[in-house]
Image (cartoon, rainbow, N blue to C red):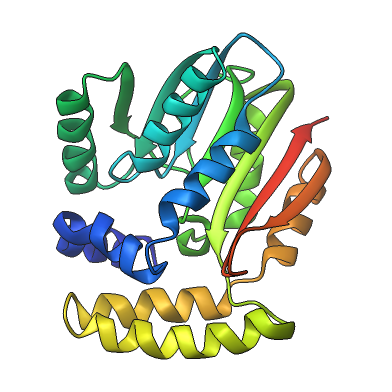
Length: 229
């Protein structure tokens, strides 16, 4: 899977931000803003590791939120796709932001244990080969009491949101023909098969307390928060 994902994102890296916007019907910026608010710790100064940072959109949202809250955030993003990172690095240079994006593997993080106050990830967990390994690595690099803020998409499983998502998924498939049909089919399938409760249970099992699922606007995105024991 990891090889397929790397190749897929190498194919779509120039259109990735556009695809996220289309997949979410333009709500992805509001989702990032909401998740960034949840990520802010009760500290004036802190270190954040954004895993599978892609083109840096969530890292930028985190930095902007820290400024709004008058906090000092040191933010490092890692991703295993060099093409995605190149887009992100150029974007951050253009915006003149103090964010560092480097090559790195979510399942084998090259940082010492107990390094970060916050670990984040956005729209990536459903593509990881081994969520247990990911949860273990996140726990390892977090300081005791450090927090997770992990955002992804999943199909709503009940109520009006479920009905709306059925219509929305059909629209996404049509939109895919105008950007990258194969990539869209895979990404839509991964959303349909994702389960926020299973992800939350994995983090509970791997040393996290106060694990909570927050459903974001439209019900198609969620944020998992929790604290390292």
